[in-house]
Image 1: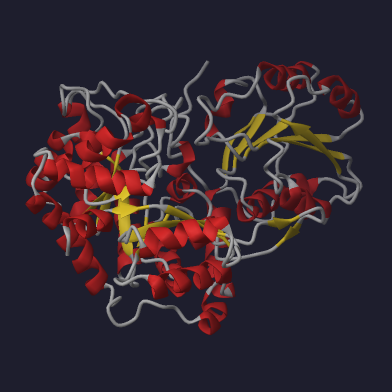
Image 2 (image 1 turned 30 degrees about the vertical axis):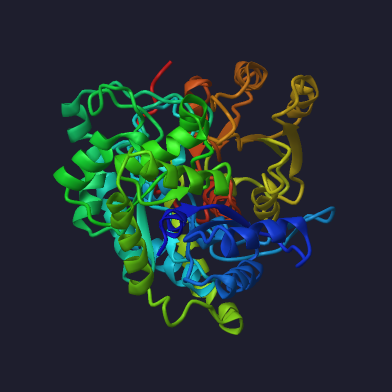
Length: 537
C-alpha cells in the first residue's frame, strides 16, 4: 500500500442512508471518497433499513478493499435504521428494533436485558451492513448538568455502568459485530457539550480510577473490540490540557500501555467543536494520529484529512510505522469479520431479520421495566381506578422537530379514557400561551404534563425555560396536582421540586411512550429504580 492508501484507511467519513440518484452531486461526492480517496470505512447515519443496506452494498462494490461500516446504534439498530415519519400524514414508516435509552436499562438493573439489547443490535445491524456498533456508552453520568450524555449513560454508579456495559458488549460481540466503549476516558462529569466546545474534567487521578475508568477497565476485560475517544481535557491525565482524542498520555500511555487494550481506537467525530474550534482540522488530525488513534471519524473534509495524515509522516511528526500499526489493526478487523469473502448483505433476507416481533417484545419489556415512579404524594396513580369518562388533560411539551412526541402516549391513554384532551406546547416558542392551558386545566379531573426536552448535540443546557417551570408551579399552587412525565431530561425534578407526582420514562421513543402510558394506567407495575441521584433544590 502507498503511504496515502494507508492514511486513507484511517479516515472514515459520514454517509446518510437516504435515497440519492446515481447522477446526484451527493452520490458523486460519496463515490469519490471510495474510488478516489480510497477511505477505509464509513460511519452510516440515518435511513430506512433496506435503503441503508442497498447503499452500503453499492459502496462495497466500488471499493477495492472491503469497507468497515460503523454506526451509532446506541439504542438498537432502530436508532439509525428507521424510516422516520411521512409528512403531512405523520405515518411512522417503521424500521429496526428501537430500545429505550441506556439509562432506562440502568433503571432495570438487569444485565440480561443489556445483553439482549446487544444481541439484537448485532443481528439486525449485520443484516443491513453494519460491522461496528459505536456503543455502549460507558460514561458515568455523575453530573446532572451534562447536556450531551444524560440518559445515554447507564447511570451514575460506576459498578452498574461497568456490569451493564460488559453485558451489552458480550451480546454484541457474541453475535458477529464489534462493540465500542465510549467516550474514553469519560464524558460523564461535564456541563459542557463537546459538540460545541472543549470540556474540562478537573477530577483527580484517584477519582478517575475509582469512577470514570471503572467501566472502561471492565470493557477491556470483556475484550471490547473498539474504544471511542473523548473530546475533552483531563488535566490529571495530561497537564498540557490536550483533550483525550489528541493526547498520547491518554490513548497510548494509559489505554494501550497501562490498561492493555489491543483493539481499534476510534476518535469521536472530528468535525465537533471540542477539537475543531481549538486545534483546527489539520492539526487535530495529526495530533490524534500521534496520540494513538487508529480511525479519524467524520472529518470535516475527507481529502484534507487524508493529506494531513500523510503530511504528518513527511514532516516527521510521526513515522510511517505509526500508520502501519493502525492500518494492520483495521485490515485485521476486516479479515476477522469475514469481509474478504463476504462484504455484501442479502437484501431479501433482511426483512426476515430486522424488526422481528420477538425482538420487538424484548425492547417492550425493557421499556416497561424501566418506568420509575419517583413521587406520588397525592396518591393519584394508577389512573385506571378512575371512571372511563374522566376528563384527562394531556399536555405535551416538546420541540417542533420531535414529530412523535406524545402521539403513542396519548393514543394508549385514549383506549381507557376516550375523552382525553391532548394539548401541545412548542418548546421552541418563546411565549407559549400557558394562560389558555391554565383555563382548560380548571375543568380537568387529571392533568398530565409530559416533557420531551432532552440532551442534544446542539444545546448547551437541558434545563427547560422559566415559563414552563412557572406553568407547572401555578398548577401546583392551584392544587391541580399535575402528574409530570419526564420523557426527556430525568433531572427535570430539580426545576420543579414541589410537584406532587413525578414519573421518569427515560426516553420519548414510541416503545417508552407506550410503556409509560400502560404504567400510569396500572396495567404494568412501575418497578424501575433511579440509577442516578436527582439533587434537591
